[in-house]
Length: 278
Image 1 (cartoon, rainbow, N blue to C red):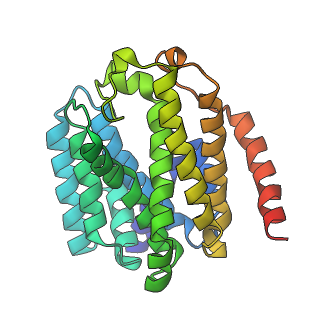
Image 2: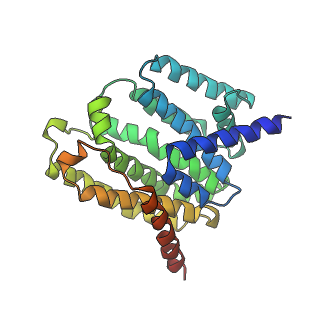
């Protein structure tokens, strides 16, 4: 029965999420059960593409990413893929009528990661759009279950949330991106001159986006509201920790939130969320 393979496909995406991200796993678990598989499928797809460009250094990344792109297109056209992660993703795309232009934009940003690049403001915005904002829109299409009016209303905040998550990731991963992958995402920043003044300027931009993104979370359907709020609170906690750390240390280590802290954060966030709706 094909249902067995489809169930396996979603299970593989779920396990990929758990293996790569405890924070997103917690956020997805806080969603209504009916929409969890679709969000696992989206995360699994974008995670696999990201791993191709970030981790598979001993292989032809361009060839692998091109093949991955063609397999995804073919799967959406045919309604099946023998790759479980792509199979779960194509089902989600078809079920929730996710615009394939969002997928193309995401894969374009992944292609930008194939080479070393210094980003100006225009390229930076293009990369953020594809790597993060459109992923937020894919998830939003699931959250609103195809409601076009609600999608359009929440679209700006969903994009802003994806953007702010990605920019926090850039700060967190500064060491690996710069020293190991040769990437400098922040526009017009010479990493050899990176200091607390430059870091503070970046952080001020991120802080403003956090405020904008929060406004949209409380307009989401109840099925997704707390899960997204929990992810927001995790990233806000990570961002606050990064702000306290000097620039030279950011370039030497990857900043993270311990799993124990994440659990306590989940509990405190739940009470904060409930109080906000009293």
